[in-house]
Image 1: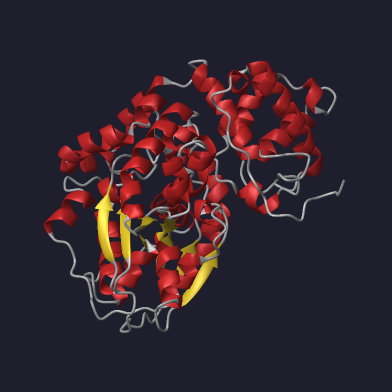
Image 2: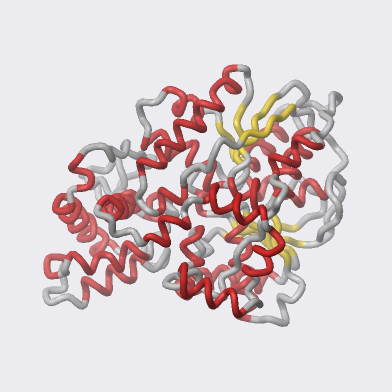
Length: 450
């Protein structure tokens, strides 16, 4: 047996329908087995707060080993895991196919699934994860919602913290009454028939964030694709289920996967590729769904037909090529590579996309922002999220760039907030954008918002 594996990481299907999967005793035995390996290795000590918590818990136990740690104390370790996958993808030498078979994120997922099955997931968290329902309600009264969720509105934000547990200082994305899906039906962009990529076809999976919170992200992506000759359709059957995954509700994730895959399959059969606008969603379609619903042919086909938006634009730039005419951007940008983009093992596609713009300078940050989706907004996690993201905020401040970008819009806002906490004066003009919005601006397809 080798000390560490040099082979590419691989993952096993998640057998969540097996009763043993949610058997608390068997879970506890597996957690002790893997935690013992992690405690000896410690390579992940600086990735997130789960590992310092784990090592401190074991080090301070009676024997200094995992055998004297109470099972209920493992909850504190699990609570800090955001399922970013960075330990699995970048650090652990014992991931499958190594015979130690360590998959720390999916072990945390299993623990969350057991907690959910036992009814231990708080009702407020269960209601918050119902993204489509909540966003539709918030969008119908968007001006009031956006007023109430502003961090400067101390009255409503204090009330939200007390009732639903969202920290009063956490940035909440704005909602739009007119969704991305609605806007695309009103004014679809004209496809450039003279572009090198003319004839290609893509379905844009809108994602809940682009659909409800930032339609400009979807409009920018569709405009860039049309300008480069790609015919597009916009589809949004439902959320990808990442919020449910984070809380261990695998039955709901599987249900969403089947619904979305079934609706997208006819488009794929007609020669369309599928493009997701947010890395967490493309990761779900490509990687997580096939492990959770491994017997569904639609899910399998979808997983091999899905691109992240940055990944797809870069592929066009290499073959057959992009339309010329990108205006120079004579300033630097700081780009945070989202963890769920890195977990797709596709390279620095967002950085490659930005470097298509003439005269641009890109400072890349390849470290977790600490936000972890809705996890970082919660009262119990917000300070930890800022702590984990502090090295990223420091790097961004050191780069001295006005533009701070991330493929994960929530991460971008979180990084900027961390920068402002560290140095309010230096970051007064910093704004956050998605890389595809910058590319659309360079093409002259969107109004200047820089």
